[in-house]
Length: 272
Image (cartoon, rainbow, N blue to C red; front, top):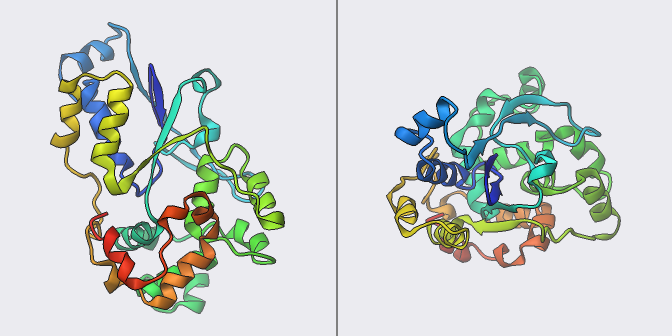
């Protein structure tokens, strides 16, 4: 989580948040230069902070684990909540492929590996189709146990709710009972599909100078999985496309502009 004097950036994983963090750090001189040295010895008035938190999920479902830069909305310090809250989202089709190719899940299985291998003997060598079903069964499994009773929720939707909802358990309960979806109007979302332009316009609206905005064009993509810009049609079948549309219904209710119905429409996300 990055905090400046005007806004808070929430780093939603696999959406381009590492790129945005790098741009903002470079603008504030955090990574190198005399500004960094002054801040390090306690001189000057810092306009930048990077906060690290436990990777929490709703306590009703999941235990706390680990510490990293991906602090979620409900971890924002109270004194920072009056600032603009900004984050980045990405279409689910590209994000699933990116997460699959990045492979973090291979070395960090959600349950004991022997339990996984009972159903998936080839783990971690899973096809994309096997990975998608693996996500639905195991990812955030404590939450999915309750969801399966009435309306299963896809991994991306669960992550989105856990990351951005004020009270995730309430959001999920409302959705499962009567389809009410939070509008998340308290967060400014930049879209990964046009991130350079959207980030530049956002920083301009926050008062950054033209010289600062040049950092957006100068910065390379960060933590690229090898799937960014991939041909998505090579991963999806019509059945898998409908799989995403069905189980990530929650996300598509919040962002209906992302939902597509045919494989041919995937091409518009190939550079994302």
